[in-house]
Image (cartoon, rainbow over all chains, first blue to last red):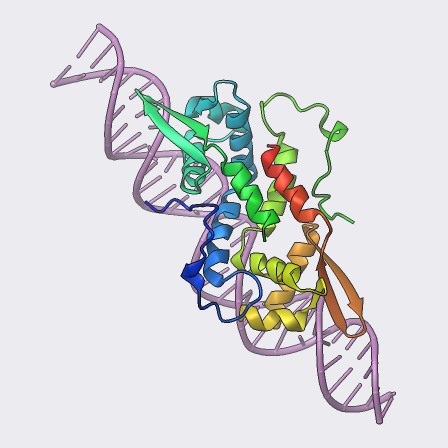
Length: 115
Length: 115
DNA sequence: CCTCCATATTGACATTCATCAATATTCAGG
DNA sequence: CCTGAATATTGATGAATGTCAATATGGAGG
């Protein structure tokens, strides 16, 4: 399971944080994972295409062409975005439809302003 | 020069964005650079420490200890954060003081919600 | 059952990255 | 000037990453 729990306070888990004014080491590592998922241009484009689609979801075949990448590469990027808790995957028949996890982008934005 | 201009509208610069529903390739690359700067746990901790400091600025010597990293490594990370437009560097005497660029975190958060 | 199609996984390769040790730079004091 | 201190830069190294070609998986239709 896991799923990064993007906005988790991670409060008592790090009760013994020795000092280090800011983030605990563990807290920083988890938050960095989300930003790492966002640190690739093609993944940003995938997110924006999925978001822009009026139906709210896109299948891999719609995402391969505009990025000029191979299908396995697009699948790989999509998996990273799903693992980061940003995209949701639903398989219907032969097709896989990806959609934004509601509120995920806003929660991630909150990670920044709440640093 | 450079300095990523985190919140630049990049409006007319990409007037010819051919199609690709979402971000243009160039737009995506620039935004990815900011998130790449945020994709390292130690850099997130640096940001939070600088932000948490009541004086609003910290020198390298204050940042080396809590991260348990060598001084060159911390300098390297700070440079990346400065290049990303997130931190400001001011040298006074022998010391270098780093502070948050006002509004930079909020602008970066806006990159996400405005995808 | 067999074939086709959409997607996922594996393996390999080149590139990028985080880190450190060593060295260079720059400034303050004597 | 010379010394010492704080920071930056360089070079090297091991790990992680993005990409593709090849293959696997799994459902749809004949």
